[in-house]
Amino acid sequence: MRIVIILTILLNIDLTNAQGQGPKLMVPIGHTSTVNSAKFSPNGKKIVTCSNDNTVKIWDVETGNILKILKGHSNVVHCSNFSLDGIYISSGSMKKKAKIW
Image (cartoon, rainbow, N blue to C red; front, side):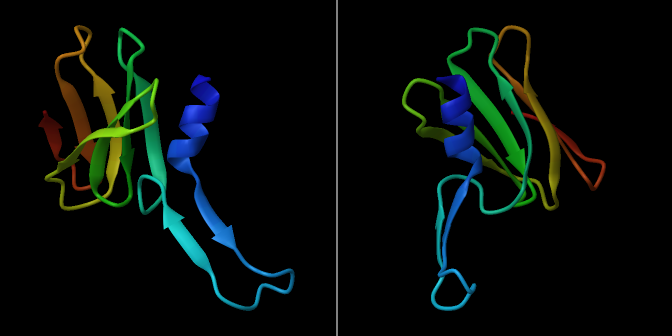
């Protein structure tokens, strides 16, 4: 189940014909760029992800829904993780900035 949810979070759908021509439909399921990290909360009920789209997102493991989008980094977010008690999230960007949410 966890693998399916993570894949759902990380994938974009790319519909093209066999020759690579024709219209493309890109449906952002979550992040709009490369995901750099995905970590489970201590209780296993949430996942935090971070991305080249400068955001951190918190997901519900059971439903796969986004619970919260954290914006505030001005550059690629390289890492994110939950605190040991699961209350806070830390994130770090390529501009050498760290945030506690």
